Amino acid sequence: MTTKLLYAAALLACTLAMVPPLWALTVSLSVQGGLGLDHYREVLSQPQFWRALWNSFAAASSCTLASVLLGASAAYGMTRFGHRFEGLALAILAMRMIPSIVLVIPFYLWFRDAGLLDSILGLAVIYLTFSVPFAIWMIRGFFAAIPLDIDEAARLDGAGSWTILWRVILPIAAAPILTTAVLIFCFCWNEFLFALVLTDQSALTFLPMLMRYVPPQGPLYGQIFAGSTLYFAVPIIAIALIRRRLESSFAAGGTK
Image (cartoon, rainbow, N blue to C red; front, side, top):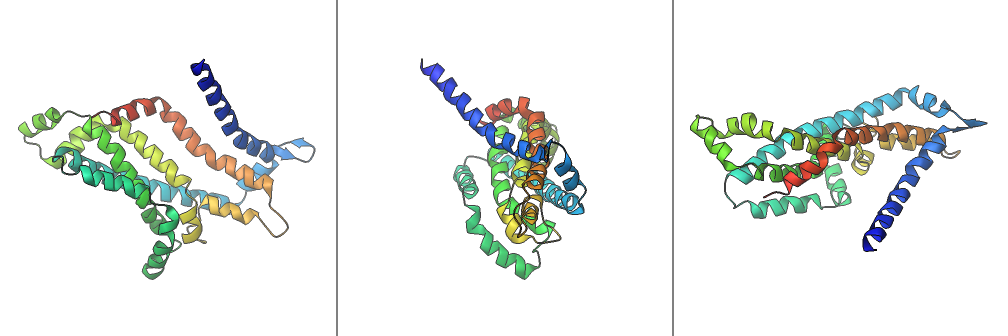
């Protein structure tokens, strides 16, 4: 009986979660006289759509690459050089829990003085505040599951720490690291607050750009939901491509 109730609750939760995207899809296809792709054609024909899409991709991709490189290096040191970094691991996880609203004003003032406002570089840098702690915590779990005997065998062949990391450990953990990279990309791709406050024209990303579809006459819901549907198709496709690796990756990350 308890199992049936749990399945019923899970089914209800999944159904409720599907209502907003299905409603957005319906509104995006709704035109006078029925259904059509007019809103999609209008959105795709606007240069600001493609510019904002590129800015989102550039910021998310650069942050993902930097996060994986920094996270892998830090995680290797934390798992291979003794247990004195356990406290540091918890501190890194605590950094991930800092609310974004606490950081946005200090970063705005700093970026204004450094000339990084409204730039892809500045946006990628601030994304590192939440992506690097996540990368370190995830990759650390993957590296901890790799036996130290592999490192010792490589050292007997004359390999140094950097060589072991890049030529031995990373190839072994390539699949879970790729999973981590995709998750980080999705986090950056869906970020809104930092992009809203720190960008305006040159580096305006997609989600803040949707606010341009709210003129004084009233929101253009068709264009807003058409653009949102196209935008969120990217992380959905990315997650679908790695869904088979997600469970095994998280299981590997939890192994000590």
